[in-house]
Image (cartoon, rainbow, N blue to C red; front, top):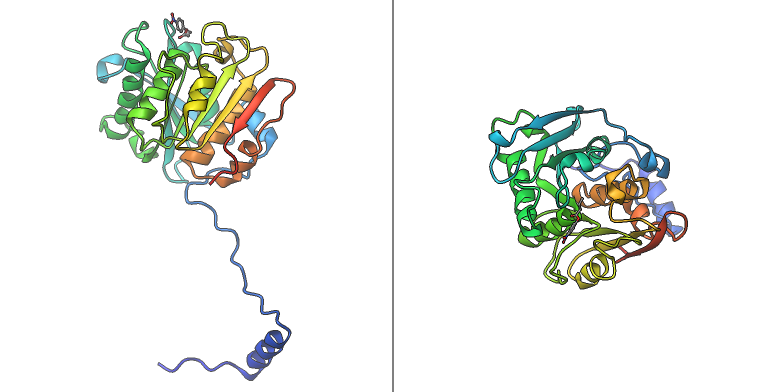
Length: 292
Ligand SMILES: CCCC(=O)Oc1ccc([N+](=O)[O-])cc1
């Protein structure tokens, strides 16, 4: 087939533009990442009590799963936008999911499937909690009896947890580098070095934590990570138990981190780099900006 000849007018326009040295290559509209979900983020949307998605929940009996103690799944009800990333969250020593349950609908309303787990025993240690987080993720993406399984993208998974659950979060991320994000909250672990970690990790600590003091837990954990993106948020005057009631700075930073690394949604970079400044609820924020 003959190429369509350029019209005289087009040729003239091109010649004029070239002479003027100003041929503008039409830039396509900024391509949206394939996993971006929801409207453009704002600080108000991240600090509101709910994100843009309506959510529902379903409980998971300990008798229907293996490797963890069941729990509760929260998910966006919207089925028009493709699959969502998922995050498994562990409570701390002697605690149950109810201690963190505000996080379930909060995160799900931003476009994530969340499983808040019960541990096999409330006395389980961090390594066991890490294995249980991974078992919960495996359940979400593999168990054919789970009717919402097709809402979950098996390649976009994350872990989080409080205290020994935060220690378990580090264990899970160390054991499974294919995870997209980890968020240890007031993490507690006897192992202080996580130099092998390749999972982008946001650590959130409390300035006044006397059970997992940041000086012997969150800070050395953060400092030991060198192979991946990391951020450290320290909350002003916060005790070990800050995640056990609605905590806006935690939710804001956690949603931004999950959006950025589970959904590859660079619209959230602005909340990570440079991130929150010191003052008010924020004692300190450190990160590895710029994000690559
Ligand atoms: C809600 C409980 C959070 C948590 O895990 O707290 C603790 C962490 C470590 C110890 N400990 O090592 O004894 C105790 C509580």
